[in-house]
Image (cartoon, rainbow, N blue to C red; front, side):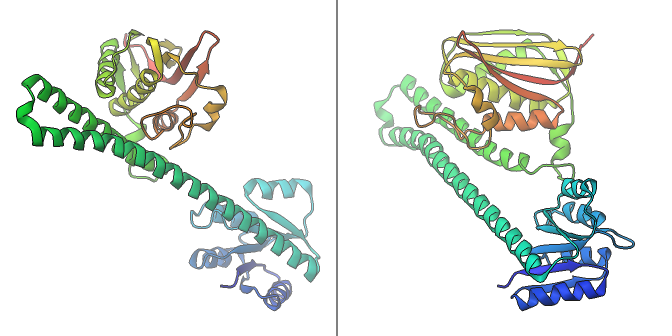
Length: 366
């Protein structure tokens, strides 16, 4: 399939000369005599490259570029300006709006062809890199899913098979214990599936998305007992008891009840999962118009460079340590907090403590 180029140029002679030269060199070319027609053609038939004049009546090249970049289907289409304007301020303006390159008039056919081919080659490299990243992401997802699903399902299938085939060999205490293991495995599997669905939505949510309001509105009261209850729920799910301390100031937080529960659950889950016998500490207090919630644990160190690498399906040092889950928890927390005008920070300290700190808009109850 040949490469399609759209030329938006109000001067007919230049437009036709450029089109003819590109056609002679094997490109499929469409033309538009002004910005409005050019935008319409780009939307109707997405080109592989747009060449656009800057100075045009009614809708200049900058307006064309802004319109193109605001359209989801066209936002990554390579865009080159054809211009007689060489002022540095004008060049910077175009580049800040998302232009990929400039070709200054007058230009030769050879320079035009070279610029077009270079731009298309860079776009091909970008796509190849993106495909490589997507392939790596899919591999990470497949590995995590295989491990996580099989671990929980093996527990469910193994215990239920024993109960079905040898129920008369177990007393009531053993049977209840096995049923509890099945229940815990089921809860863990449900949480994993819910998080996969949740991160899929959060990665694409914006003001136009139907779920945007759900993730960005609401208030709730944070109380010490609520944090303690969440710790107990996580302990039960992980089948692990830890020492913990809660020192939380009661306050109203600008985040919905459901989303605060998610934030607490993921931070506490991580802290318990990676804590040593020292246990975990949860603190929270108002700092002006923000509420600072901190969940700390002493155990495996969360390295400083990992903070910038927080992303879905990313588990740090997995090659060294056996880990549960998909590596979605921190990515979910980070996105939820940012959607509610807050921030997430993780600090590692010389005494061995790792502290995940969340700031969210908050106010005193009084």
